[in-house]
Image 1 (cartoon, helix red, strand yellow):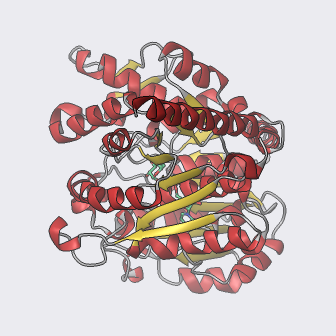
Image 2 (cartoon, rainbow, N blue to C red):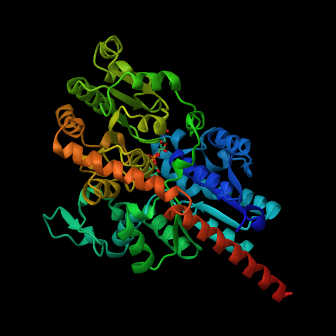
Image 3 (spheres, rainbow, N blue to C red):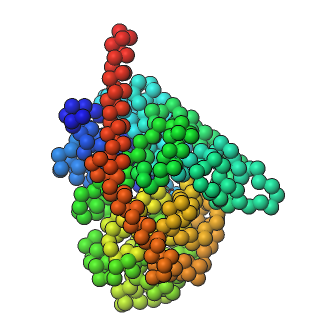
Length: 493
Ligand SMILES: O=c1ccn([C@@H]2O[C@H](COP(=O)(O)OP(=O)(O)O[C@H]3O[C@H](CO)[C@@H](O)[C@H](O)[C@H]3O)[C@@H](O)[C@H]2O)c(=O)[nH]1
């Protein structure tokens, strides 16, 4: 199907969080590069996160546009400017997700009425968009930012609730019905009985997924073939894999605009990496929304000092510890690091994909957000896994046990709140990072596997590759669906 021939218009409506918006915008760019008119819909306060990617795509002759809607802050009972999970205090994030974002329904409906897209790819966290799409008689496709493996685990846990059947004293369970034996600690999954509202929300997500046209997944078949098959065949769901979407970027300048503006001069950061030996630098970052207490940050700093490894450490500029570096940076840390040129502490936003793709980076300490995992895989970088919440403990199992490119730091408990989290001591962190970045056979084996996956990831995105072909298949199905809908409405008249 030639680009002009189909004239398909798709709305992309991601959840208001960087970990969802960044890959959704990349995905929209990929659709645009296949001749689809790709429209990203978001709120005014989130425009700056999206605009550079759109400008970039349009510069290279693609059809992308941004449609903005106001965020009803006062109706939602949120302070003005809180339009993204990254800027909403932890205690309000759940309310933001469940009760605030559905207020976007009217403005979304207005935009659909006005622009009449052929399809909407909306976030899994917007279950109500399934009804919106049904109301307009267009297909809705779910994008939830994660992968096949974690979707299979989530579904199994929701369906079988194995942790609720543990006998007194049992602390672990095997996730039922998966292609591999995956064992989790009870504490590594949220206790749904203690969170009835969250359990109800999960049920809504599941129901809305079943009322949708299918799911589009930021992954590639060769990465998780058993789980792509399990999701489609055993669970009977329709899905297309189109990733890693981060590979859509064209060059360094393009990469540098991904997400927020970098808090470090990108050229300085890359020059610093140029001065380091291949595979010697530890990159430490925990995504766009997670926070640590000052006590935990201090343990990380002590571990970095003790490891003697060159490092780039990204610390979010948000939350209680943000303005008080003296509470968590050991005395003289910054001076020592800058005198020895041994590390960079980036406060705020780092150009993550550029860093991961630099040959000097040898390992990535990550919270296992799916984007971070997949970006590391695409760059061939092994992981030190330190999951915190969400589906991150499932991703950890996939990285460490199924793919064997990750080594666990030893996090044992799921919680969204930094102050409730177990403390991981410097000695433990240092021991694991040294093992992963050191020369031994174990480290080399993981690096080899990661590099092989990176090669396959690139291949999947090339013309004829599995993700490239699945996007073709999806576009074809959408064109066919549009034809059916048009015939039906002629028949109805
Ligand atoms: O300084 C930074 C910090 C983050 N990023 C980017 O921001 C994204 C972060 O996404 P991710 O690694 O998935 O982490 P979260 O922001 O925590 O993502 C949320 O969304 C993901 C997708 O649904 C889930 O897998 C996670 O559990 C959930 O916390 C990635 O593309 C990073 O490259 C940067 O570029 N620079």
